Amino acid sequence: MTEPLLALEGVSRSFGGLQAVRDVSLEVPAGSLTALIGPNGAGKTTLFALMSGFLKPDRGRIRFGGEDITGREPHRTALLGMTRTFQIVQPFPKMTVLENVAAGATFAGKADSLKDAQAQAREHVAFTGLIDSADKLASTLTLAQRKRLELAKGLAMKPRVLMLDEVNAGLNPSEIDEALRMIRKVAEQGVTIIVIEHLMKVVLSISQRIIVLHHGQLIADGEPNAV
Image (cartoon, rainbow, N blue to C red; front, top):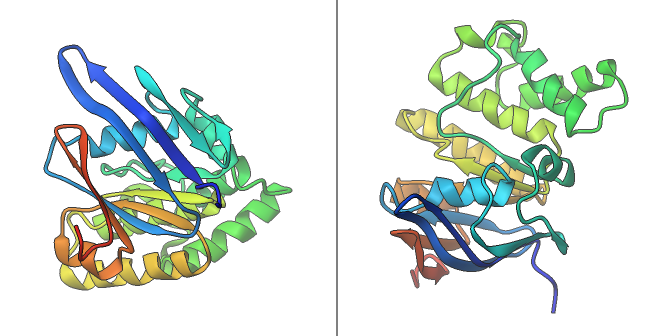
């Protein structure tokens, strides 16, 4: 049996008296496209933070690529190929679009030089439709453009798994369609994707599998139609 790329076993996290994540166990196969859904406050973003090292679990284990990464710092998990985006997009505002993406290529993308990082960054900027804004400061971008920049930064880090936190939030229908097109193309390249999403039309259109959290507990896990 093939070992999953990402596996959680009994992962829990509390904040004072609030149990944000409760004994969550799940496996994510390599190359899969999974939607993580649930109401506001269900623990979805907290689970992302636990998997990527931004938070440490109170209990449980997390394995990535067969390696125990429980509580490992986010910069170290990023070097292993675990990349996440954030619901509230915060690029480096005084750097250009290209410089923002080149930073990811330099750090976790293992670029050989600054010139190589910039070349890689230009490819990702073009892929996300930002090439005409490559030399603009990130602070001047629209929300839709900042969302694309967040995706480009993530791709520059050469992810094995890409965790997208509400990448479509605040976008209009045509912008959502374009975002989904890009997500599908990334998945076709073999990148494992986990996406937090509230729009069920979007979830059902792209997901091979759906995981449902409620009050921090995993209450469903399976194919979209079954869930």
